[in-house]
Length: 252
Image (tube, rainbow, N blue to C red):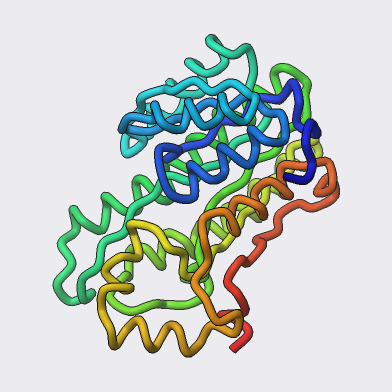
């Protein structure tokens, strides 16, 4: 894998790291030399073993990021354990599929709390740590192409991801002067648990397949490569940008 060693001596905090894009991002950063803090609600034992096989170190931290205060607690625990945080990959998120006429407020709020509020809380906690230490850092949010489109039956998800694109820009404006690069990736349709209902629906799957110029759905590693780029020295002058990783979906 390219870029081996370019993140050596850095600590990357990755949320939602037990599977999917979070797992792939943790491995991509580990292959580049970063030590990885895995923050999630579930068990990340397999990812710890995979990071070890890649020649790096990973530690797991349990957190329910639907509680805003859990973000600062998680960052503090990582700093206490690993000594620092240099890179944040705010990947943890959820989706609620239901016609907007039928959505209950509690379901709406659950998506907003995890997809948007927790990302701000994590970003703030990491930025406070970096500013206090006088060090540069990278903050990478995981948005979505639905940050630019409305989607169907996913009003809360689309709203949260659209707000996340704007949050990325707003934080970049405030923190670039501190040497903190804030960017985002916006995946298109990726083969993950969250998209299984779409892939299991023959009609919807055919509609999506027909629109992707690349002719395939993304694998998690496709998105992880973009995350690793934004974390790398090559992206030192990239700030406030949302890098779309969609096989050309938005170009259609």
